[in-house]
Amino acid sequence: MSLFVETSFESLNKYNEELCGDKIEIMRNEKSVIVVLADGLGSGVKANILATLTSKIIGTMLVNGENIEEAVETIASTLPECKERGIAYSTFSILQIFNTGDAYLVEFDNPSVFFVRKGCFADLQKQQRNIHGKVINESRFTVVPGDMFIMTSDGVMHAGIGGTLNLGWQWDNVKEYIQRVYKQEMTAKNIAKLLLSVCDNLYMQKPGDDTTVVAIKVRKPLQVAVMVGPPVKRSEDRYVVNRFMDEKGKKIVCGGTTSQIVSRELGKAMVTNFNYFNPSIPPTAEIEGIDLATEGVLTLGKTLDYIKMYESDQSTMKDILKLNRKDGASRMAKILLEQGTKIHFFVGRAMNPAHQNPDLPLDLSIKLKLVKEIAKCLESMGKEVRMEYY
Image (cartoon, rainbow, N blue to C red; front, side):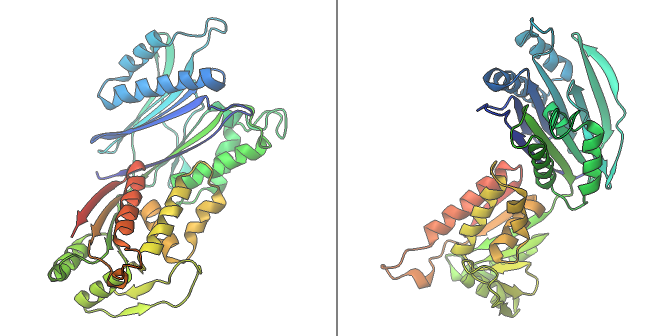
């Protein structure tokens, strides 16, 4: 089974604390994706250190093929329990999804994971085990595309306690909210942002506890091919366009000259769209067989801005929804961020003839830098990125 595991997380620090006592570790290898959410005892620096050690130890051991018993034993011997309170130094949730579709969930004293399949909540069969004095809940199951998992720290359940809500935003209340807002096309980022913004409001922007939401969505892989710039040798135009068109999935052409080359080699007319949806972003064009054709450097620069904004801790749902706009940069960012899982860049290194005048800046180095930065951002999200230069 071929799957892509999309992950996103959002956190609020306890009011007046500089560090978050929750820590998320996401690790990928050739066999699986491992997501660990650890919630350190207390708050601030101490909790952050405890949660960081817990998540790092568990994630590293599991990604290297060790089992949960060995990971818990290592944690137990490394981080002793709090003697004053007699409780665990850190609670944790672990979700491991293998490329085969097999999945493994481990929970220790964190709120139960929310599992959504086909828009409805589904129950996971859990078994209890005692590992080195700790009661662990385990589930083994198979995932399918469209499945979504939502992990939370207990700060989510405490949201509003003693204030807007007497008993806090309890597990069933959170479940009811997810059921109400969930849509099949929602990304992991969308659901994480939504849930955290509700928590922030319930806390009246003064969180009484570290609060974290981790969303994991299982998706079918989707390839996206992006052709940026003309090849150095004009004799390679046809070869590069043919290779580009042989790619499966969505196709984006970036650059006016590049679009003309693709139009010519395909024998398809290029029709420029004169609607300026955003005055600072040049209009797009239409070429039959191409999903999106845009201008070059300006659009790439704006696309990178949108990608960085999307991934920023400071971004809001309002920022995320900007990707639904119709300008070329918003459309390109949306395809790369929310649809593509395997991105193949075909990068031409020919100089733009319009910029040969020494008084005008050459756009080649800018263009290459922008493409590399976009690729780096996408790789940090777990996407598979390939670069070819011509």
